[in-house]
Length: 115
Image 1 (cartoon, rainbow, N blue to C red):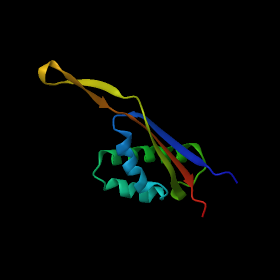
Image 2: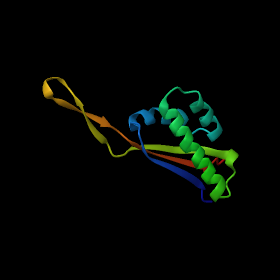
Image 3: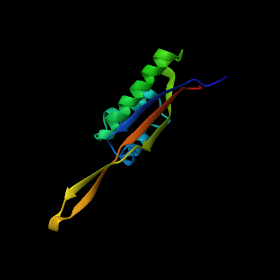
Image 4: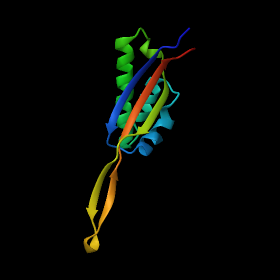
């Protein structure tokens, strides 16, 4: 029996992948409903971003495949680094220091619970 998977990808999100990875550990392996409840009450900016991508993956599963949405589990969330925007800030004595504005690619993979 092949396992049905649903995916959603959000690219070029203006947040550091390191900050997104802190949210990933809290919800990976949990049921979708439980994961969304956990993220809803987290104060971090990354929590709302990850929640949005999970909801998109659930919508993809509902729309494109015959998967029971209530039995979905968050199999994996991947936060890869996207391109970095390089900016400069003026400093003393005519110098400039580099500011790195990092971006992230977030991939959510949902699968049906095998229980």
